[in-house]
Amino acid sequence: MFKYTVTAIALMILLSCDQNTPLIKYAPKSSQEQALKNVLLEFQEGVLNKDSKKVENLIHEKASIMIDRKLLSKEEYAKILPERLAENSYIALGKPRMTISGDKAEIKIYMTRGDNNFLIIFNMKLENNKWYILSWKY
Image 1 (cartoon, rainbow, N blue to C red):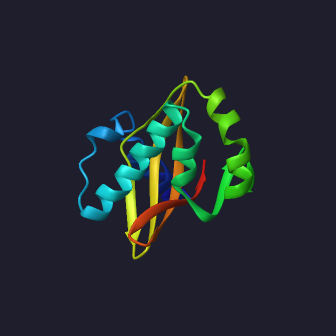
Image 2: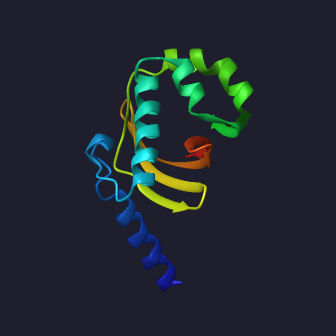
Image 3: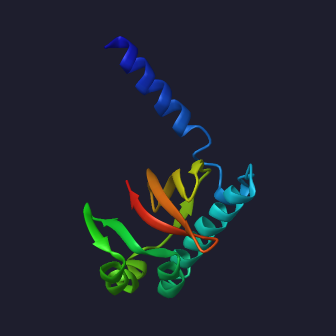
């Protein structure tokens, strides 16, 4: 039991390191990481500018998006996206931890929204040489 507790604490410390470093300062280790970083920057910009079309275009057609602990399809999410963006005042993404495997990627990243800072996990899919957001959870 102690071993699992120590492992969990070490993992939390590791994930929280650099959480306040802005995404823009992240130095990708590969061209795939650069492409994923670009998608995240576009997402952040779309939310900040309340550009629902920009955000919607980053989402995969078969996406499953978590909103208020409910899963929505891309079509369902697109219907509420303008309203959701109007409610958001500010977001900032931190330094990501990326795991890439073929045409899939998992990105663990801290998001600051207002006074809240929380971990969000993006699942990405590469299709036609472009990365898309397939899902996220927090």
